[in-house]
View: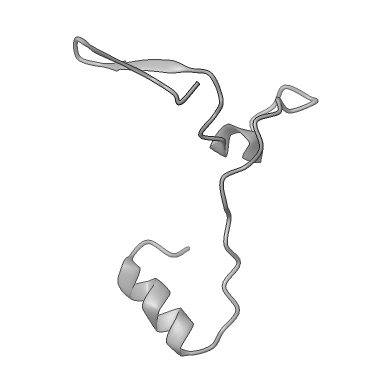
Length: 58
């Protein structure tokens, strides 16, 4: 697992293949299980931190 910018730079310089995981589409999983679809920045959701409310990009 790549956890730091330094690790990405090291892998890039070594010319090893890096398997990137980009933001996913915003379709719900057909089985309603957690999948890569939860990585969509467009998935409608909201959450709170203390007394502050946050919403997704929808």
